[in-house]
Length: 233
Image 1 (cartoon, helix red, strand yellow):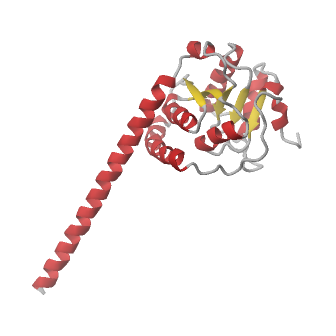
Image 2 (cartoon, helix red, strand yellow):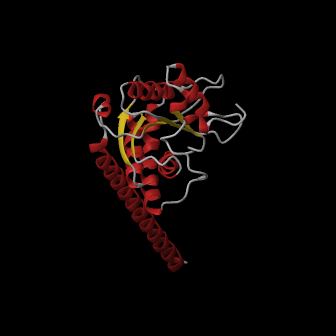
Image 3 (cartoon, rainbow, N blue to C red):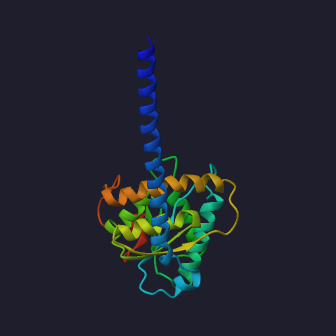
């Protein structure tokens, strides 16, 4: 009985040691990839003034975010659009690429984004919609492969910007980023924690290079943005 108990305790100690070692490795990987992603992206983060003078930019990528039940953009999305349109008007690029989730008929980020941008005076032909931007990784992959962009400015909040810029550059775009922090956001602590894990996930994604959910025909960003309009509209 005593030997069995000793054997069990030894086994339990072994399992605990393995779990502790795994937790240590996980923490090291999490910390290491976060530091690497942020450090790699830092030189590519610009002020709006610097972005306006960058030159040779194919498009400004505005990343999608939540849309309210009444069809209006959330505060986070409003700020991304306001900054992106401001950069467009300053001459940073001649085209906007609004990318978000339009995977279901009853949820549509990109048409909301295009409507908002055109209401601010951007010609419809200059606003391309990526209806299959289901994640930051997929947006950047499609920006290069579907929309044929090479040199881009990405607009999103600062907590998200390093990851977006890192992904884009890792996938072969020449990418710069401009932050769109125009106010305080209610769930910011949650976003910050989630982003820690997202950076590690997308660091691994850029190594594995999985294809996005959809690719499809090429739609050069140098063309007419209305080519991306819904056929039914």
